[in-house]
Image (cartoon, rainbow, N blue to C red; front, top):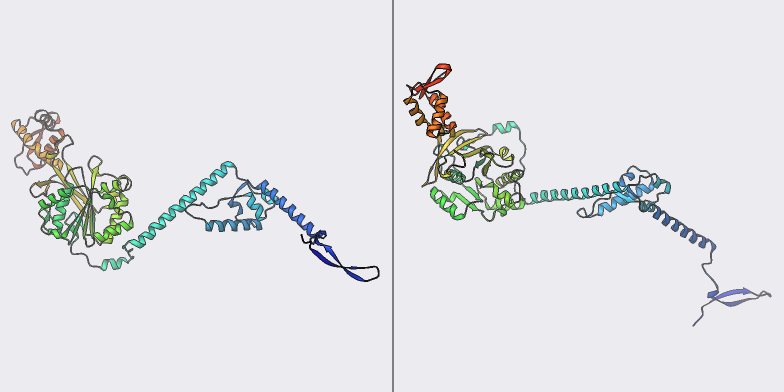
Length: 485
């Protein structure tokens, strides 16, 4: 083994210098008292810092303690937390809402400064963790909202309208026609058609489509301004049934009608998604009127609540019409609330410009095939009183006639009422007549009362005041005389 030597100059007694070889093993080149002291000092400081980290390390403090804190350590730690949060994954990592005492020690905080901070209790730590989780959830929602906004900007063709002055609005000429269907459907309006189960909604839709493309009178009474193209999106009927029913309608301008049978594929009509809605808009391009029959299957297919989410689909339907460039739209829905109003979200009532209703006479115990249907409409510049619908089974054409359900029940009871009074003129009061019609002829009290009211109003019956103030009935003379009193 070779030994390393250093050459060293030495002096002899006679003053002559000589060279001597000194083994390196015998000399410590770092044998410096100052350096050793510094090393010991560094080791002591490291040990002290480690002890302080252990002492304060498990304590947790709210990051709000760093806000407006002028101490250099606080500013340093706040900056480090800010940089960490800026680099975090916003989907997976929550923002930093508390810090460990060890981080404050590393940033230069003294024991006195740390003692002034409010240490979080276990309950407070749990609350901060909940806040962190809430912040993370809120961030994810913001990301979803931003994503939807970006998708809408990318996929939708709808342009936000620009505001204009009322003066400019009023100088624009009015349309030649104020109604698509006279008295019932305003130009540019939305119609909600509500009816009970199997009350004739689809037949009504067929009549609407036929008159919209062929012209003529809707329900044999109301003028129609025809359109170039109508689209029917049907979510309930089988294609074979649709074909048969439309064939019976005998539509002349069949090229002006597009039918989209969605039974079994309703989930594809997710118009609440902007990208899907734009795809449908391209499919239905050129339509002037779009009819959705019926709303409920769409809600079910999308997992939405009829009571709370109908408005979401209606707003999306409006957006679809805008993308297509369609002027009018109709949505068909089922009735609820004792079959007198559309079932579900109250937004249904706010959305439409005209509410069309089909109702049936009698109750559910009656034979459905014999129950009469009645039609009415109410809305913006729309007010049609209830009238009876007649149905041609060969052509499936509907017609509207004056007369409400009350008038209908009165007409049924009227012949028996007049015959009863003719047999006993001046002897029966109104209460007596009601009771006899009910007991002897099986006529419901409401129908008997409606017949009495109608007969007295028309003059078919008159009355005189008898004993104890009774109104005694007699046949009327002039049928146009209206009884008073």
